[in-house]
Each structure stands twice: as structure tokens, then as C-alpha cells.
Length: 270
Image (cartoon, rainbow, N blue to C red; front, side):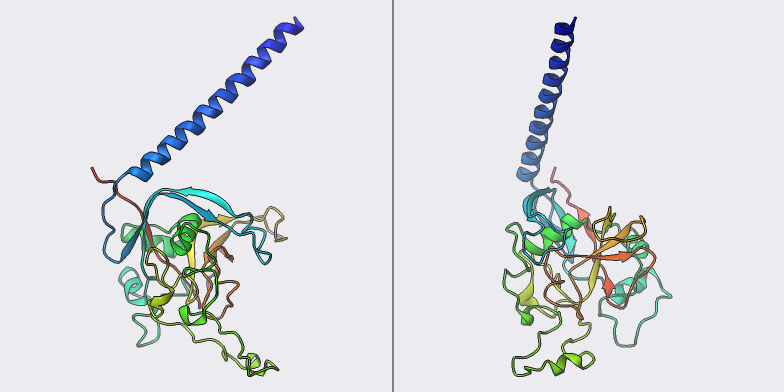
């Protein structure tokens, strides 16, 4: 009897292993088909990001726990906005939305995540996933910033480091001394990502569709999910501007430097 049970258990384990191998092979073949597939051009104002693996996350010493490890992730083909959504665009969705005069073409901010999602639906799009956003920002090779591995303050709207001629750091004590404030999208063409996206390091934080559950990683007292924002903003440093960095924001709050851009699943050519 014991021998029969052992054989039966072995057969089950072997069967599950075979199913697992078959599932992985089917997944691999499906990914290969997506990579080989041709897609329609992106809609106006968007860029195309092809299907395939990219290096996501970070093994940098300064990386946060939720960034680790650096790993390969497959992302299906998608389109994503070249620029952040502007006040002018957002007001078409919400006519009573108010912002300072003369800032029609500045990135929209003070937007709650549900409102960002509603705007995306209104125009037939959606928020990008965190993996989509990160691939669009850094390409497939795991670079730290959209333009490469070395930080360059001339390529983005992030807080400038204190000048070397200010050894006492007094300029850092002045309000806004090392930041430019919010700027029109596309103000730093040299900082474009490999796919042509602008301002994916700095200017304003951007909502993505993911929610973050702490599970003790950061010691939040509440088990409530938090929204994820990416890219850093004009008042933040090069550390927050890294493509792998994730900011966390309560879902019922927003700020003067939180905006978004939209994405769409790519349409295969028939």
C-alpha cells in the first residue's frame, strides 16, 4: 500500500512539473509572437514602445527595498504620451478646473489618482502600469536616467546640486534656490528617453496604475494601499529622478507637483 501511495504522489508531482514546463513554454512562445508582431503607428502625441523584456528595478546601493532587485521583465507593446498632460488638456475634461492664468501649457497638477484615471478613460486611454512607465523611461538596458547612467541637471527639471563655489551650502538654505519650478513639457529635449518620451525625470511626479501594499517594508501603520508616482519632480533630487524610483502617495491626496501621462495598449496590424 505504501508503495502505491508513493507512486501516486510521484505521478502527481511529475504531472504538475510537466504542466509547469508546458505553461512556461506556452508563455515564452506567446511572448515571441508579440515581439514578432507588427503594430499600428501610435496616435498623435504618443510614442510606440515595442514588446519585449527590459531591465526593471535596481541593485544600486541607494535603491529602496521596493526597487530591488534588478530583473528582466516582459512588457507587451504599448503607446504612451510623449508629454505630461497639460492644464489646457485636462480642462477639456473638467471645465471647472482652475489654474493660474498663463499656465495653459504647464503640466496639470493637484490631480487625485481617480481623477487621472477618469481623464484617461474620457479620451480612450488609461494610466500606464509601473512596468510600462519604467520601460518607456529607461529603455531595455537598465540605465538610471532616460538619457543614460550619469546625472546631468541640464537634461531634466530636477533640483540642481549646490554649486561647488558654495562650500558652506548656504544656497541650499534659501527657498527654491536650487529649483526651477514647474516648466512646460518638452523643455529638455536632450533628456528624452530612448523611445522619445519627454520629462520622465523631473518636472512633475506621474501617477501609474499600480497600487503599493506595504507588507511591513516601510513600516506604514495602515494596511491601506497607496498610489505609486514615478519620475520625481522639480523640487526633488537626482535620487528620486532615477527611472527605478517609486514615490508613494495616499489615494485620497495629491500635491502641487503630482501629474500624469496616459498610455494605451498597442494595436496589432491585421
